[in-house]
Length: 151
Image 1 (tube, helix red, strand yellow):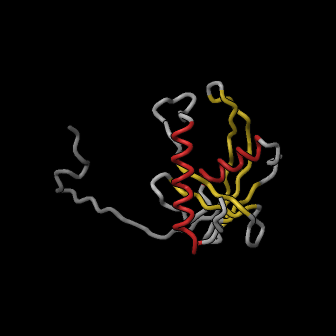
Image 2 (cartoon, helix red, strand yellow):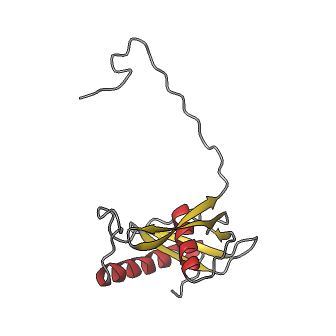
Image 3 (cartoon, rainbow, N blue to C red):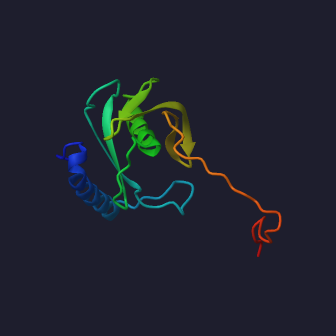
């Protein structure tokens, strides 16, 4: 797309993603092969050379609403792995994507499946996560709505 995969170019990436999404939606109707309620293109994943570590590619997932994912994104990793598999480049190994924040997420094809009449893949994702919050609910015995409301 001619835009560096860097946080300093987020607005350029977002503009490029919008152009790509608009062109894709204008040229080809997109619908899930089994569930017609799922339509349209959810976003664009830009990929390029990684900057370090053990990643295979650097990625920038940008959703249709313009938001940029801080991680490599499980959906984006699944999409990239599916494309690489269709090109015969994924093999049986792990594909690791590096995010613009420098974190990584990996995926591998674990099964080839048919989704309606379309070839698909089931992808297994590996990543790290950390607990960032803990929340505790208190249920008071005299609260008349302690168990919610059923209409």
